[in-house]
Length: 163
Image (cartoon, rainbow, N blue to C red; front, side):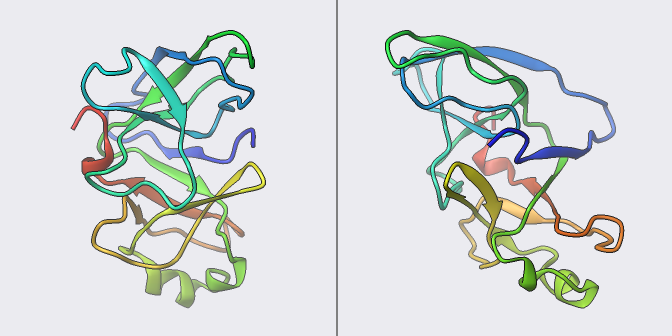
């Protein structure tokens, strides 16, 4: 869904810039604010795809970044999408899968540092709360009174296409 993930903090070096990638012909669009996968190596050229549910996983899924525009592909024609690069220090906001798990400051603080994944249901990305050593997102501190219904997170370096 458009705008699922938003930049919270650009880090010490400011906005990292966007890269334009090719998207294969598909009825599924990549919307601005959605995570974008890029295979390692040159097996797919510069073609990217939307991330599936229960990803990213370190050493398995590699992200080019977060879509800055909506892709222009159609069911019968390839297109392009601009992607904001992943860089260390960049943090994001996303809605939680289960809001009640994160709705008090104490509940939220208990999850800071957890390594988690994202869920994709009905075209919307949300963040899960289960911690595992291979999961590719890290929960970052956030004042829940200022950002109700949101989770601040970063991507682990091991899920970056450029790592």
